[in-house]
Length: 290
Image (cartoon, rainbow, N blue to C red; front, side, top):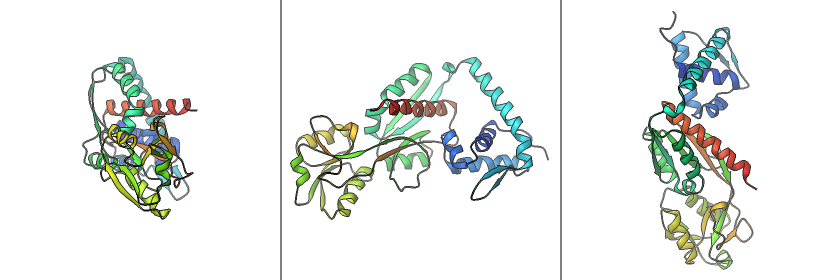
């Protein structure tokens, strides 16, 4: 039975899978999770009453029904995007709820957000700065449209990786790196990815540690480090020139930090445009790094 209507969002997921040959890469292209792409395809297949892809461990290929749908999907989405562009996206309006770690927002987002606000003055931005695990809870509860989150190297966290940077140890002077007793740490409150990274890394190196100063803000943590209260784990680019830093010489080496961008499956056009804008701005920034 023919479907009553074709949802353009579902068609866009179908087209992304067809173009990339992968649910994971389709999710990265659409700035959403692999599970969201799978759900959208399943809804489209139910609507049409046809299987559109053959899936196995090696490849994703179109079925005859999928091959028949493909040219229609390409034409419909091209016409939709052309019509939208003809009205100018400066007319976008609505509210976008963005969640981000405070340190990442401070270092990398001001210019990107300012550029988006200038291009789309009618879009209201609500930015929440918090610890990654708290942001993930908000995102999964539907309280954020977009979330930037720190990811452990082995973590199975869906999203598009938009940033990677070495982590280093920061201290007032190198003498703290040579501490023989329990290493005093300047950390954020639990749950915090960098706090866990610091304790786990020292534990693997059979070095004891203690939380000497707990602070939720980047400015407060840097002040504590400058006062000699302890050692902090920070992205390399966030360590001020007046502080000592170590990348695996006196202290055990840390794995790089990764930032992933996640967009809610039901996010509206303003949120999707902001996600694309952030990803592009960060890619340009990475390209300019020495």
